[in-house]
Length: 195
Image (cartoon, helix red, strand yellow):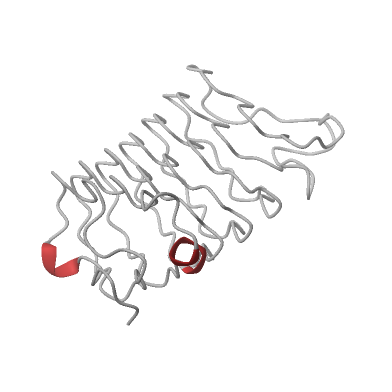
C-alpha cells in the first residue's frame, strides 16, 4: 500500500534497484500509484539497469521533477507518451544512458520545462520526433542558458527535425548540444529565433 502523499513522493523510489524488472503488484493499487500521489519522479528508476516495466498508467500529473527518472535504465523501452508531464520543470538526465529507449514522446506538454540538459545523453536507440514540443518556460527563463546543454550528446541514432523549436533565448548552439550524435546540422533548431 502506498503511503500518504508527501512533497517528494516518488523521489528515488526504486533508485539503484539493479534487479528490478517491473513494479511489483501492490494490494489495492495494482502496479500504479493512486492519482495525485507522485509529486516527484526524480531518479525514481535511476540505475535500475534491467527495468523494463509498464508504467504507462502511472499518474505523474503533479510531478515537477523528472530529473534522471530513467537514467541508466539500460533495458527500459516502454511507451509513456500518454504521461501528463505538464507540470514538469526539470527534464534533465531523464533518459541519460537509457540505451534501448525508443518510444514516442511527441505528445508531451513540456511548456513549463526549464531544463532539458543531458535528457537524451547516450540514449543510443532514441530516434522519435519531438517537433511538437514547445519550450515556452525555457525561453522565458533559461537556467544560466544551460537548459539544453548536451541534450542529445552521444545519442547515436537521433536525427529528427527540430527546426521548428522556438529557441529565441539561445543566440548560439548550447554547449555540446548534440555533439557526437547522429543529429544532422540541418535538423538543429534555428538558434535565436522563434519560427
